[in-house]
Length: 260
Image (cartoon, rainbow, N blue to C red; front, side, top):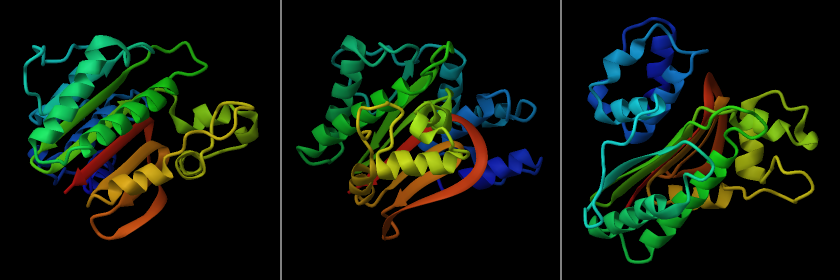
């Protein structure tokens, strides 16, 4: 995830991309695909050079409306999965339940302790549902999102991405936050202060404590929307959340990496 901002800045400025295509992580590939797919910000078809990265290629294909390449059988062991979200009911039913069950099995198979696998799958499901539900709130846009995970020995990454309305527009639909002018501030309010688009229903779910807990596993939590980025890095000992401004990106992308 650390090179994604330099990579995008190079693309925006027409400079040569120094990052190796094969080095793109799951979160970086998803974030890059979302940025390039959005017609208002992408340069002239630069996505072709990244299709050699299978993570990027799969994300791009799903954003274009394709179906996953992994038609699983119930007994398959799956350490990596992409799941398209096309409607509010996508994160319901048997198919989504199997994704979560395979994630739990993959965590156990790759050395994560009993109990951790349930908590991680629950966090993944809760965040996916919350983010996707806000993706097209108050609009007639079709929902276009992806949730994905990748598990390796004692390492797990998951990402949730959409190219919907983004944090600022979603939060601004609440009159209390109608004066917001930046996605950076919107992300800070949502992630740290439990701000919510819901009117007269109290604070939102908020993720500050959960993000800190996830980052404490020698990991990274990163949320991108509009011109904002909210991040926590545990691997360098900085657990205090950081918010900054970057190049604009559509919708909202959440990436989590943990190691034990």
